[in-house]
Length: 167
Image 1: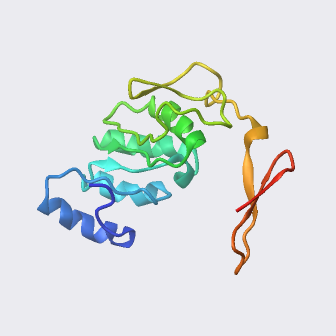
Image 2: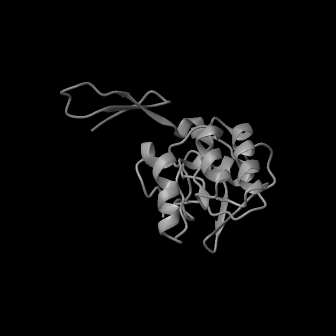
């Protein structure tokens, strides 16, 4: 069960829920530190930690959470956040010896701004041997929302080439 309780109830209510069910519990999608995970992992009140690289602050903190989880035989299911973080999860999770699942909703569709990305075939994602996270970013394809003001009917999107799109 993914995040079966509200986040502010995790520390007090997950231990109680653990006693009432044998269903695998996987909280933590919004947590940001090892301190959030450690008590529940150490007590085996959860079966999977939902840690994600952007929320915990990067690879170093994720490796520390992975070590705590491995010590107590708790699996990891990183929360899907976006394509670049997914590449980071893929490479980081390769070092985790325990149970691991990973949310991945990109499928075999290409990411327009990532000409070099993870390879997906037969519903499985495969790492690559390119340096770093193994991705290349085409900045010309990136867009951002320039402004959204209260009462405005929509937003303006400005591409890096300077062109505008209104909606």
